[in-house]
Amino acid sequence: MRLFSMSKRIKQSLALAGTVWICSSTNEPEASYYKLVFTNGEQVEGWIKFENEKEEQCVFLADYHKSKNILHVRKQEDIFTANLENNKFTALIDDQKMTFKKQKSNTI
Image 1 (cartoon, rainbow, N blue to C red):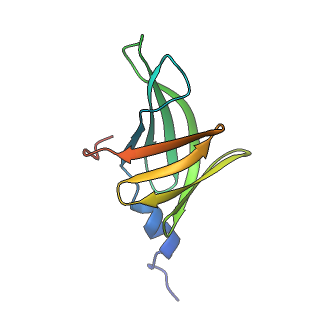
Image 2: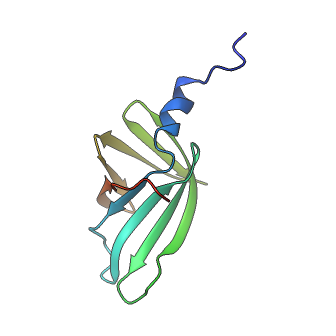
């Protein structure tokens, strides 16, 4: 019996917990950047910062898991996958190729 052992998948997802990732190339002219915040080992928040607004806006909450270097994000029926490479990952989201870079500070 392995009561206190974690599955490999949970350990990999926990590695992203508390990290912040930014994509500065957006398909919206008014948007400065998109941001993903991995709040824990299961959930990620999607944020957007508009140029004419002071505060960022949270636009979605989704579930995720990481398997080796592949990130899977699911919000109801919407799903995207990304390839993780060092401190960046690339995904096809809303018909746009987006590259997110990990931010230095892990503070949410």
